Amino acid sequence: MSVDDDWLKVAARCRECGAVYSAWVRSDDSVQPIGRKDGCRCGATTFQPLSKRNDADAPAARNGSD
Ligand SMILES: [Zn+2]
Image 1: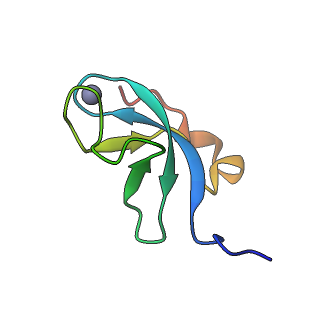
Image 2: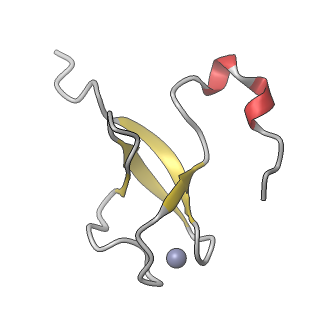
């Protein structure tokens, strides 16, 4: 049943330009934008997840570390 159980769908923000994409967080915590295997439109390939699997249990996660 849970084929892709190790992958979590999140929103992720480009570390370079701030664009937000839907993305997968893999079991090794790497972030893969969905449908963008080459990374962001700006060419960057590093993304900051905006939500994580334990977000519901961690209200302190939203502390605006912008
Ligand atoms: Zn970008």
